[in-house]
Image (cartoon, rainbow, N blue to C red):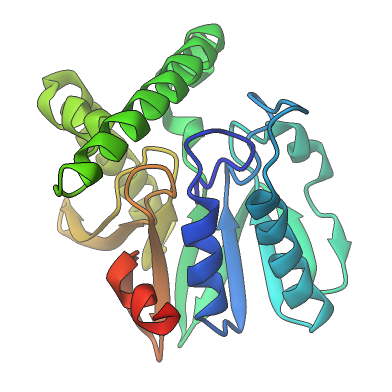
Length: 243
């Protein structure tokens, strides 16, 4: 989720390396894949197009690809139910895995600012993109000095109590509705906070998962033989193949 193709913060090169390293039977794109909010004709690097081509290549080979719409690509929501070969567009989706029900949706429906102050969210997205540009400049300097990368935006979010409270409230709300509807798992994106944890409410439990993003965390959720785990991009892993 939250790839944000078409923005300066998108790590398309790293994402492409990851996509080339896996052979999925089903790929779920859980919202904010192409950032239509901030799309600019003058900024669409080759790596961003290569990500799209790679995914469409899987579609051509019959790999099931489910595109779940998010708030940054909400223009696609009117096409919910559209199918073309093994590609389908949905606003939410339920996967059946080993007899258990996995509820997938982007998560912006539970964001109060999205519902009541969309202009503020759009304004924040522009500021976030500028912060990512600043972060890249800082990391470029840090790398030249022999230090590792840092995420300014992530540090800011982790240090602001209201942001932490928002994440906790988001997870709790999603879990409550998932439990109420009898799902075993609920998977979201939107808040750029990768997580796998069990949430217990009123004696009932659900496995809450968030796939994170490809702006700050460079993360994804993988399910293999019924077991879920978080993947985090590791540059060193791919460098050994390029050497």
